[in-house]
Length: 339
Ligand code: 2RA
Image (cartoon, rainbow, N blue to C red; front, side, top):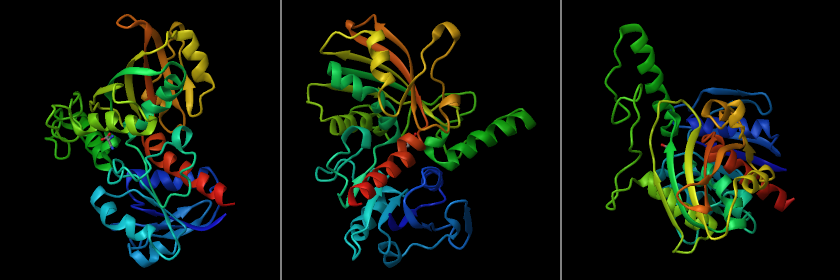
């Protein structure tokens, strides 16, 4: 058990889920401290950790904690994470921003995949949620059949863009019901209700968006893929509230079959096979919402790649698997390793 764990950015969509994960999983800590800028001074009631008064960030206060879960912007993390991790108590930082993911000397971790041997690192980066959701299904497939090509198209919920994204979708729909028109978007680049937006994050020189390139960069780093394994993604925002879905096609080095993949994924950690088309059962964001496991289904032989290809669909709660849960499992493993 540790003395204290803190959450930086406790009132954002991910920060709130981090506290819930600590509670639900009975995290072995005496105390949880919460830091937030706008919410400083307010009280958060926690069944397990009592009433917690949200503190304003100060380096000294955060450095008193054993583990710091960061759900803040990349810029904030760039400035403060190394200082927090270098403090007198050797606070371990687990950062959910993109600030450190691509640094060669910083581990980018999905605990069930590449967590081993990294538990003691002072600063660990969490992957982007889109990567994490797909990776849970792709990793067992890669281990057994060796990935050659991965083609992904995403259906990403409004909450991937944070609480403001969710609010704009909800308000847009409520206003349409009341007044018959959707207000002009202020947060997303375009109206989200009754629409899909094929752009998440900024466009890069190669024509892909940063969200799409994150999938390529992060799968390469987490899986340790050779350069000749190609990963491409099209990332799309859809008018759902929570849980990201992904349509994935893979070409493999070894012959692969849907039945074998179903069996393989049934025993994979963090994965739930939902694949009974006959009874209309397949992954859907509504069903994946609030769950730790990523749902995988629609598993079929690819008519493009033949016996060395399959296609499937995943839905996973991106706030949990893609952010809060991933960070909390990293922290749990660190505590276990030091016990
Ligand atoms: C999104 N994946 O859904 C992003 C958040 N990191 O917007």
